[in-house]
Length: 352
Ligand SMILES: [Fe+2]
Image 1 (cartoon, rainbow, N blue to C red):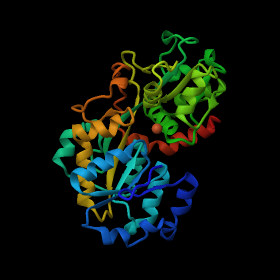
Image 2 (cartoon, rainbow, N blue to C red; image 1 turned 120 degrees about the vertical axis):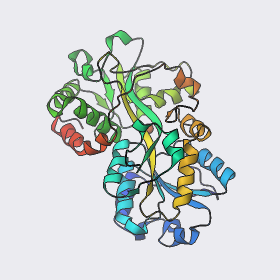
Image 3 (cartoon, rainbow, N blue to C red; image 1 turned 90 degrees about the horizontal axis):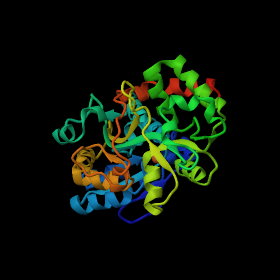
Image 4 (cartoon, protein in one colour; image 1 turned 45 degrees about the horizontal axis):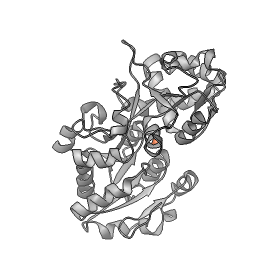
């Protein structure tokens, strides 16, 4: 992780975030209570972000153009959300950037984010990718879909997430554990579509197929490429990254749930909101608006091969090559509302 004088980057593991969540005193020194207050109005924005892929370059460009310095602390979505809650009105965070709409929605319902009225954000970010109450805004789209090894599987054998419960996939699946928000939001979207009983039946089918559970989408795709499995569920941009470094990377992608009448493939967002107690609210808003412009979008989404939220922004050529998809238009707040139900369902179905 790069640490520069301009951008202070503090990397926190899950354990340290959980530990720090209960105590402001446990914060790194630069984030100790008072430091951001001294910086208020002095051209700073403090961010808690679970999105750490390639953001340093984006924030450096923003600083060059605006003079506003960006400091960010990274960690997992739920850990950072819990930390903002525990810090209350003393939080150093002006902005929360998360890689899952469920956690953004939960932050809003917990009162951690303030509503923002911005014509730039309203016109740059489509309605279905932002909170109707304007507490958070999607900045990129990440599509969770089905990946396969083309020597062992034909695309025509694949159709939906649900169909991966078929016994034909026994011993052939590679998936992410239940502890990760990507798995939880996918299952939450299925609960929204089918209800709990049908979703549990599907998840039990996956489990009966004895999937390998690996807590890294990149590692999942590497296992697939090496012949350690045939079919996987990952986010699209992990394949984009691997293709960037090796155009012959032997894994293919298909868009799940595309049949007429089906809901479309699972689309989540990375997005951001301004904290209720932000001390640098105007700077945070300026950064949010800047990222929503086509130029900010190109830098922010392109650095990680994500689809921009702003339809006027260019799409990275590698992922443009994946072809068009129809995404699930589920109200993204449902991913937050159903998160706890999804976790309980995964546990009941013995998906670990
Ligand atoms: Fe990711």
